[in-house]
Image (cartoon, rainbow, N blue to C red; front, top):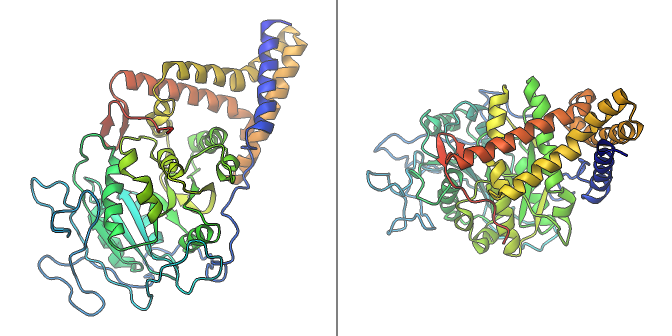
Length: 478
């Protein structure tokens, strides 16, 4: 056999191993663990229509006129963590004090829902659901916030819950818009804080999470829901997440939000993004009693507060560009149990209409995933070529030149590749004719990865939302 035939058989062997030995990564049946705790409460209504008030009432306090009415008393919020001022309370941000968060809104205390601690090992229905604080880091998110924030405020959760949105230096009025949306829709209490510019050694999102988690811990929650500003949740999402964590004794429950797939480029690139992620971090390996991999999806992470403290997050991962995988590894090192799967009721509303937006989304962290290692980059490029690009080339060249072994092995490898992609396309409700195009998409990802390395060595590093991290740290393995 010639070189092309050997490469084709190598690709076919690689696909046989991937399909059978890589945690059945191609299957899409890893969903939230079954629970009984939230089934009677979670009703699964669609997201509320714009303009429809839901539940309670949240409003922005006029300057110098705190709300002192019953149930809505304005007060200074205690804060814990490294960013707390010396007197232990949050104050208005002043010049020269970038660490002091600015409260745009004093929260309204919910009533009639006592905060009763829940035994983390209990399997019975709790007498009171655990307190939860939702932390949303947001930077220049005014375009998507009207689609996502109302879904958080309208969570149909039977316990005490509230939302903390951290306006991370936005220039588009994100913080003011959040307060406006809270006043329009009502629902869970909302606090909007501004932490100031990140200190050296911090990536922007983790800097925002640092302040949001410090504010949240002052409320004494048992769980924190860390979710991105472009993620919309169905009304029962929080209830189901907490149920899964409580009944299965999990410290971190993460769902891979269903990403937006509408434009042509989104159809080509987005399902493959999740497919490649699952191939790199097989969900079954992560969710085993004795895990063989560790990862999380940063758009939706329910985290037990005591575990976050034990893991020292986010301080212990403050330089991470791939913050979700770093968070999961920190939790695992602290002895926490992790679960990761695909979401059915959590969706991203961020549009990626063109290839440029998708390219930047992938390239900003691809080289960090390879630990900024040239040998790993070369190995990854070679692997992508053999596994994804050789099969169609071998089939076409073999058929054209009468090289039957190359054509047969290349066609079989391509068929295995396309077949393994079908479940993800079905999950995203996309036409199955996209499956044979996976080699083209893999070629795009190869170019994005190389571009990520080039940008890093030019000193541009990971750039996002107007910030550039020249030499970001990869997710630590320790």
